[in-house]
Image (cartoon, rainbow, N blue to C red; front, top):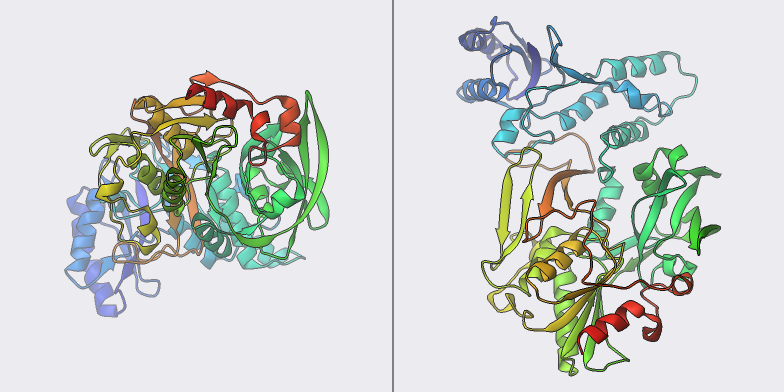
Length: 540
């Protein structure tokens, strides 16, 4: 039997407390329960036990209907402060918060803030089943128990006896980051308010930092931060960082610490970020032939606007336009059209679309660009969640209601605009995520040849939740910042996943090791770019 405690909106008067104490027990008994209901006017909560064979969603719907009839309602998502089995735990799997608390230095917070954290992390099956929000999705038969007892105990001991205090806000940030990291989802991340705002700015091409895109990497069996793209005009480019470099240690509080010592990939990436004017100091291992050489960097972070698309006329063959898509930001569709149209105006009749070192980006961005090469009704992609629920998306006109996404609108004239172009696509091992979806679309619809190397192999989709989001169905989550978690797998038109496999090129060509030691794909002279030369030859 599960005991649930909900926050009730509008529960403010003693007569309301008495009313609920009279009405809800009969309702619970109707579902086969013992009828025990506790109503706390001071905390504005109602506590009840759910019989084992009763759907939480069904009972919650009935409870909420009863509340609404008397001018009250469950907070949405319901404010679950405690969610546990009150009897036998035979079918329960316990997630112990203490397993990650022990890895943090005083990573706890006051009990009130812990309550808010659990409010944010635990939403019930009913509201998810209705598609109205929540972070965990509908409950499975083998339900997970989230218990705040251990965290509350550690918090109390620290408050009572710890010689060194701590900043509650920083400690809570550390708790949530560790919780998210412990999921095992290498793409999951909790953003503080400042980090979330910076991430949103980056998606619009407005950046502050050193100017790199990264993925989880390894060096000698330990975690590392792998650079897959260095933005042109960024502090990172000026300092000499290159795609493929592995950040193995960062200086934090004056001490150089490994990625593992700092707490893993996600925590270390957060240390790499920072505001303009501050310094990022770290150690890189760079491949030199068969070996790696260590290089120390100290880079001052800056604010800069990064173009996501760069176009130029080939010096080898002036009939070819080369369009480099750095990543799929929100402005990318507009920039892509501008560059391609400008090259067409210059007399280019063939194109190379270079997505080497492109880490991916926003799904709406890549869907818009796919539409330029396909016909109305063509399949863009399909996605599946962890329960196998499938959704398919097709080419059509798109008009976004959000002002931020207006740059990803698709008009009738834009559908199929470039489908008759002659072109090749350049890829390498750092071509990932949405860039792979672009590559797969070109392959599946047989629009052009793929030249280069097998891609990275990331076919999973992350959803980003604004934890301060408000609205009719959301109420408030109670935590500032944002959460990114993997929620779906996605598939190109052919239906075959490339996750952890990658996409093999039609024409496999590698860049010589001696070339990679000296150049990046952004400053590589055309005559030394063997992959580009192979693409040009393919279109002769």
